[in-house]
Image 1 (cartoon, helix red, strand yellow):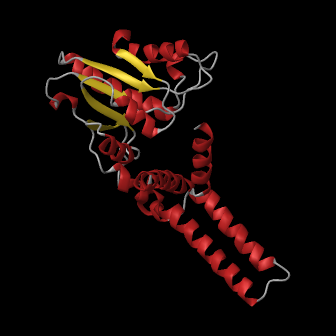
Image 2: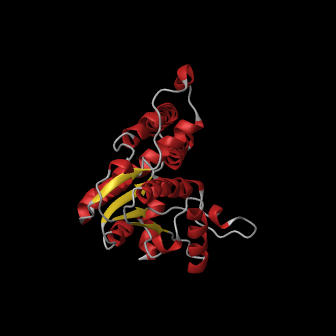
Image 3: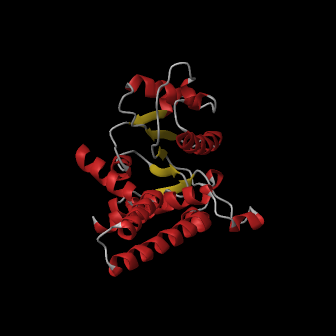
Length: 257
């Protein structure tokens, strides 16, 4: 199972914009510089070179727009409007590492902290309304002991006044599919927390496996900010393009398998 997961991640990584562009440009140079290559090879090399440059420009110009097609799908959840019932706030996992000398609540990476902040925001509102809830976070961190994960989780939510008995974590899920299957077993109505660009893929899985969850995107990306600078190619756009491609590749995988 672990080998298949690693192989899938490797193949997906090669289809990311930057590795894929490097492969295209490397193939173009190989065809152009091949001593025994004829006219057809040089023509193919020129075509690949132009295609690589075009893809680079598209990614560095339109990456933000590509990501907006994902981030705008689900609105921010309003916990003050939720009906009174029992809830499980389930949080999709990201990076975790128990680093010595760093406060436990900072052992989560930036993306996971954003997700946990959103779970805490929702939980605090439910607490004020005296609605029962629990928070379940997916924390893999294969090299960290469960006690360290529990310590970090309790330290993080202590700042929001959420007691330890309302917290639990899941450490067996290695990908989004396994997380959704595990979250399905939690009691009450589920509130599914992740970042906005990741939410469409999670909700696609939720529908497939019967997880009746309310989407709670942790971040939203605004539309028009940079003025004329948005027409200038940037590494930020390329990074957004990479995130969008990763999510769309994941959804394609769920359609096929």
